[in-house]
Image 1: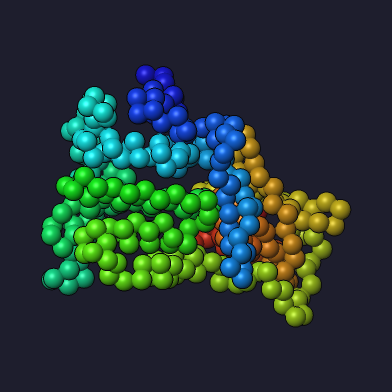
Image 2: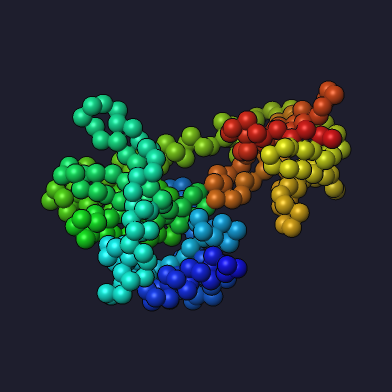
Length: 313
């Protein structure tokens, strides 16, 4: 079959369910007059519409755009074992496979606790009465936070969409709703709880150095030509560092669409650059080791697993 994922999803899922505001194509999203623009917090409780994210390259995993109305139809399909308005759309056995645990995502910490599992796109858990609970959150740092939760045995589901970077807000709404359904009222302050969890995640991913705060007396850089050259990395590929008009920049990425990052001097042989992508988190560092037999540069944003060092050829 030579049908693209985008066409297949439209033919098999969106069209039969009347999901006219759903697509895996960024161009379709851009054409809509009423669409959400990604907002990010900028301090003092304020938010700004700052980013546009084209995620076509990861369509099956994270580029869908939709509406609450459309996703309500999708949830009806899930709760009806693959049928919609009495008509079969998805094979019930195939759909059920996506709801069954395939991996342990959170082992029980003590004998009276319950383990958590991951299915095919769903977090799987069990409530106090042993009922199956399915849920998932969406979005990375550069995305719009979303959350969905289902109690299939009770024919109950909720979806929450936002237009902002993940802060735990949709997760708090879905958890509070399910808590109220099962216990009559929320058992905890879910917004405070989820906000704290997401803040911990955000802090853990931040660079160890705050590159937005320049040292009081930064050491001077070497002549910029010292840093220029072609660098190689077996995981990320080539990196080209150039000097032009007294400014330094680096270019990396696939040949079909490489990205150029301006480099700003920070301290000594360290420069900063603005991160991009779904996990962008502000300024990161380019730490040059210009001397010695194997000059290199380490990009700390890409070095979380030790793969961020590029060696000059």
